Image (cartoon, rainbow over all chains, first blue to last red; front, top):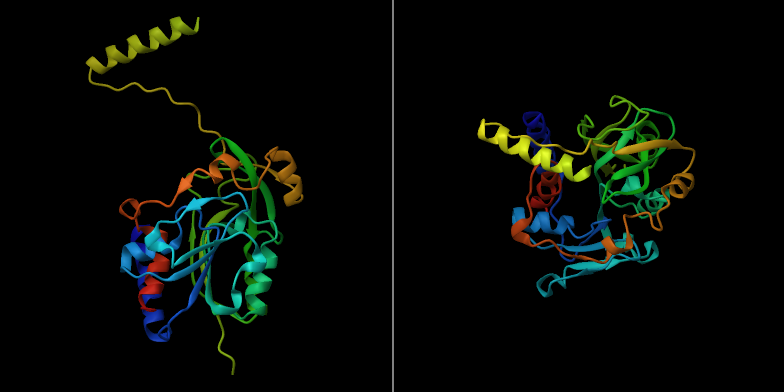
Length: 198
Length: 87
């Protein structure tokens, strides 16, 4: 399991080593649903770099940003305020499955031709349509979750000129559903890249 | 009745501990996901939850995690790997 993940990561590393251009200054990265543990912290911890992040969160989510990160982290509560135009990367860190109107966000990504889209730790199925369920494992509170149709999702990106350049598929492990069996849904990490215009 | 059961449990736990074992009673795990709904709104209605993102209390009670406590492993390597070629 771990070795497979490592191989995938090495392929991923090699891919970007050969294909990705260097970043210019003042680039903005968008994260949808970063909560109290945004990707900014993982990047800072592992490569020691601070990047500017704009994070979309729910209206009631409040977080105190330490002074040292104030120039880099900005939490936003309205989709309209997200600066898709200035961004080359949008990250859904396990959040897309909780968002009722995720299509609206994807439409913004497609219309602004955001170059890279990362979707991690997300539930998918092989069904033709999305499946709506209740999640039951956080603080004993239930809330809606969408098991996204991978076929439909991937087709949507394909139609909008995106290429799936990286994917993992993991068994659900500790997750369980009272009706669906463990083979009927799975966890995926995906990276889509906008195809070069010819 | 509850008191007798708890005392009995504690006593048994001590006895098995002296015998070199550990006795633990855990609440049965419930399912992570429940039911199937026709729409997001139908699921939200069934959740009887005010918001779609845990609770209002949860949403307002956090500070950013301390950098020393951040663990970069498994899927959390994906983004840092990408960004290391941006720097």
